[in-house]
Amino acid sequence: MTRVSRMLGAAARLAWARTIGAALPYSVTFILTHRCNFRCTYCNAPAAAGTELTTAQVRRALDELAASGLGRASFSGGEPLLRADAVGLVKHAHSLGLLTSLNSNGWLTGRDLDRLAPYLDMLVVSLDAANSAHDEVRRQPGSFERVLEVLTAARARGLATATISVLGAWNLDQVEDILSLAARLGAWAYFQPAYIDCFDHLPGLDPAFAPGVLAQVAERLRVARAAGLPVGASGGYLERLARGPRFGSCEECHAGRYFATVMPDGTMVPCHLASRQTPAPNGLESGFAHAFFALRRDKFGPGCAISPYQETDLLFRLDARAISAAMRRLAGPPARAAVGGPR
Ligand code: SF4
Image (cartoon, rainbow, N blue to C red; front, top):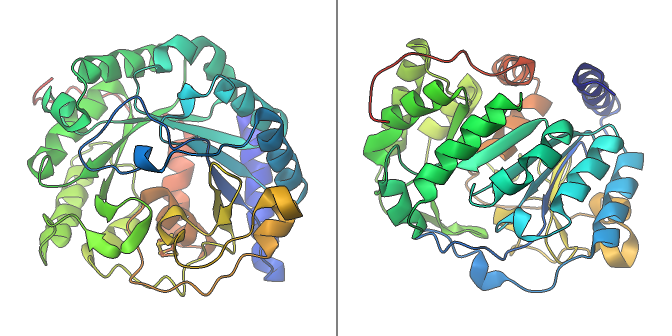
């Protein structure tokens, strides 16, 4: 099935769910593992490592959710490529006609690129600075160079790529430099603020985000986009980002209604930031489609600025800016720009 036909299939599912007003597992993130080969300064995921679904169980989850309307599967971690079956799981999702994406820190990605490229619609690599300051945040010497290598190699294989930068005091001054680097690499660039706890938005954002700081970041991203830099986020996302630290409302968010997250142990939650709020069903016990439809949606909180969740939420609100940004990203890579700035 071509990418265009899978895009059309996903759009049809979206339209159908909107028409009938029913819940639909349109987009599901599979956090395959909390294990990671890095210990990034802002991340507490590795400390949560524990039970993980087997290969057969993840395949079963994909099968069950695909039969219930799944259009898009993304795989993340921790570092998902620490699982030897990660490439096979992406391939399986692709064989079900799903749009696929994978988030990685880039360290192991080069090893798997040839096997991943035919089955992946988007490779997302973490990039926390536009120079070796990235290594300090990631606590891994050489990781910046590895990201450059893998993004270059991915593009050479025709794979669509994006960077994701978790923002905090360590890189707030680097937004434009990261965008310039992404432009030279032909990658879309996403940004989102760091949370104190990766699994719970209620303790709040990194202390760097004093009132007004996110509004400034959003404005800088608007200006950068107008200058032709490859800002991946839609205008709708930037509008929400500018409202931070109160981005919107978890009560009104479509998490748990049109998108959800499967945690490493098979627990189904609306999103990973609300994973500690309510008891959640486990797909191993009830089936994954059943777990999705049984999700409690009485979430509460100030919304969030997690980029893929917010873009999906905006898509289901038929936000024209989110739809056009999604089409732009799926249509192809940003034009490589000959812009200045650090390497
Ligand atoms: S806004 Fe939605 S995705 Fe974000 S924390 Fe709230 S419920 Fe989760």
